[in-house]
Length: 321
Ligand code: MRU
Image (tube, rainbow, N blue to C red; front, side, top):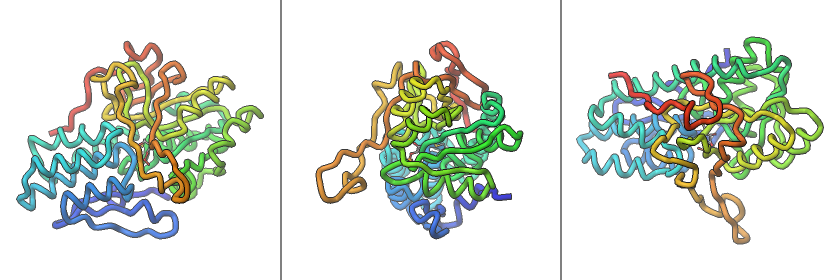
């Protein structure tokens, strides 16, 4: 019950990629039809579809749509790849599609990502203590992955094992992915949760009310430095101060072993008007949490512990043919 079906989140129809418009949630469940690769790129940039694995899946369907339309595939690749810079899943999915830009290949990428989520959730649940009060940031649930979720998938698997007492949901300024999307998903799953403003996380930890922080990731460098939604770095510092483990849950499609450290991760700067239209504003969408603040990284292959240069998989996933 409460399961958000993968095809409701993103699917390819005869003449369009159709996404559940995440900008309208939780108030309205409205679909957005993208009839060209440019439409798909715009939907990704505008966060109608968002979350690292989900934008890779949307781009994969976008390239299949381009092939079906007889579009110039190099141009379609470029416009889709340029839609957002930080999540490496986008480029990974497009590169997987290039030799075989068919609907079947894109659907396989989608299925595989959901399958990875289920596998990593089982591994991550082993890190959740009994009666855990778990804090999460942004949305790393089914909406962000095309089904099931990474951090929220881990919480869900642990909840099903009776391990989770409560979930603290960071609001996640400025676009409220936590307050709008994670809270909506947890509500549908029947998992008890409370939304807090991002700045309240430290006070909750200081009072001993958080046992574990679990987040997703947009790109993980070879040394374990992790890019995720802006505010994750601050959570990592707070978690270390209060001896609360920060666990990152992400598929191998989020790993970027070509980068030695997080210094090379491109950080998206978004429109300052998302923060305030009245005064000058800065709006970095992501930050990098240094590996030393990350207790464990969980992929579908298992639980990886420091030093990450040795424990992270170097061999990236391939879409099954
Ligand atoms: O800007 P967004 O909403 O795409 O940012 C998403 C995140 O930061 C998620 O935590 C990350 O993509 C992991 S999704 C499983």
